[in-house]
Image 1: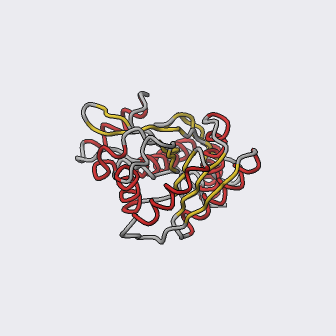
Image 2: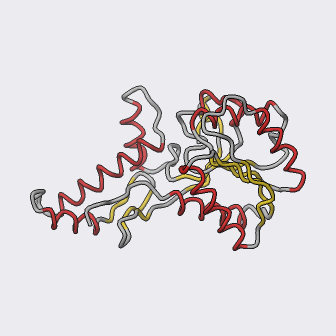
Image 3: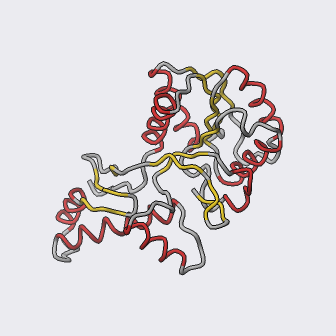
Length: 239
């Protein structure tokens, strides 16, 4: 009863991405790329299950090892598979995402078929290293730094004072702090009341950087997620 998640679940995010890709994107045949570890395999399973229930088909699944130094063989396999697909979905992170995105452009796949990523595939922290190869690609995530709301602008300006540009991890840390602050206020600062604090956390409902924020009965966050596209903003690449 004392555990609260501030980060949207990998399964939930992937299910929503499948619905967007199928219903709004109009895609029916997918190549699914997921790093071979739990943090990528779980959302990949959720995407595949949801996509197929909607009527879509995953024509090829690829599982590159975590920390793959040479993405050429994997990009080549993707290139061969897209002849029978109309979309590529990737659950790839960090340095692997940088290498995949660069390879995507170098091997001439950019523009041939849409490439979508899950949360953090195109993280703001990775875009400088990805460069022009990332422009026009899309990811589905809970934080978009360019969203023009007063609440988000506060977060953006605060992070910029540290010399960084806000990314999803800044948002989730901010949401955790904001949730706790709202709960503490509602009980008059009596943090020694553990039961009261836990109950108050479960009842918080506020407008955060990305919109309305609250918890469900299982203490998972209910929050907006966004389909984001990398574009040039003020001469820099951002979601």
